[in-house]
Length: 170
Image (cartoon, rainbow, N blue to C red; front, side, top):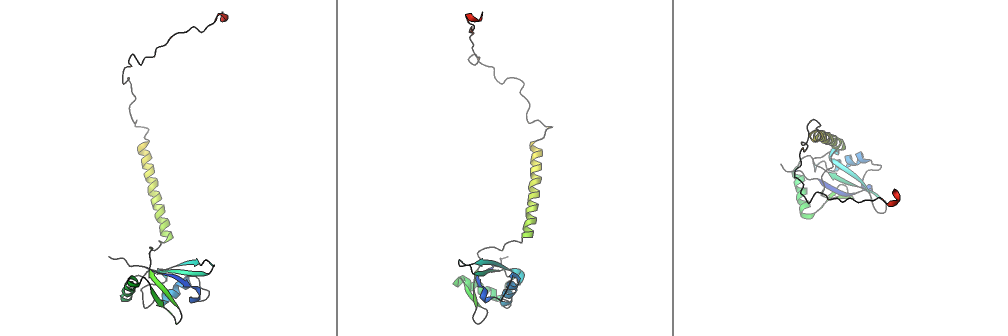
């Protein structure tokens, strides 16, 4: 099964969008412009809020089509040939669209559940490892009861006795 590529509209000027738009309204507006072109809806569009160096607001949109159709294949072919295509959605406005170079971010709730599951698995593994490593009922090795080697004569320390007493001590 081949994967369906996603598209990116790197810059959507606020002037090209309905006035006082929030993220959901922008998604609905973008989806409406692609109704006859791509198989997608508001749930398949991600909007990223960005600002220019001068502080002007703009948006980046990522479009994740549900399935392919003839228009999808035409767009992909044009982007592969030209690197980007212009999507004219009104008399004076268009968006430049290219292939997305990133994968769609996962849903945070699902990601949180996955992290919880992996953490629970990790803790189970740690508990199992502790049981294996620290079993007090099973000694790791028997204590050594006899010397491994007899000391040689060179290893036996030689001591001399000295008389440290002085005549004043008596």
